[in-house]
Amino acid sequence: MNIPRSHCPMNLALEIFGDKWTLLIIRDILIEGKRHFREFLASDESISTNILADRLLQLERNGILTHKPDPSHKQKKVYCLTTKGIELFPVLLAIAKWSCDHLAVDKKSAEHARMLIKGGEPLQQKIMDDMRDLHLKPIK
Image (cartoon, rainbow, N blue to C red; front, side):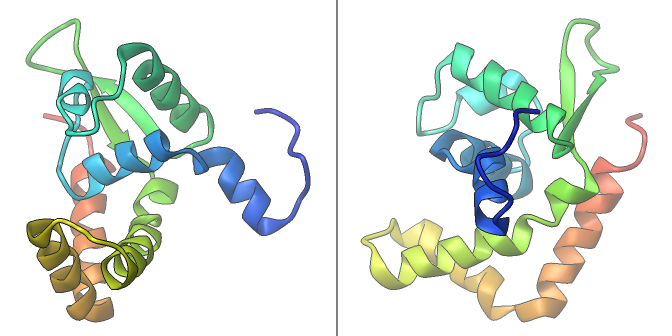
């Protein structure tokens, strides 16, 4: 990990996920259910392979993600969120809410985001519990 520019809470967080690609990768895992390198490449935003590889490595170094071997294919990795990564879910929802309130967002995406927000903390906790079950347990 690099030496932070300052120890301001906002700066420390932004040094980990302060570029658009990193939060989109986390979105893809948390909301889209993506777990493999090629699945991330298929996202609408068209991330390049070198940037994706770099961001996945940064997320692992910062304890947001881990990877495990894919039992179905020896050369594939399955990316898993850590507890720290799962706890970013409410942050992503807050960003999505702001975007829905102030920007011209896609109708389908906005409906999904509003449903997650409207469900409030009980729904969000259930989703995070489901994520813990999926990501923190061994892959079979």
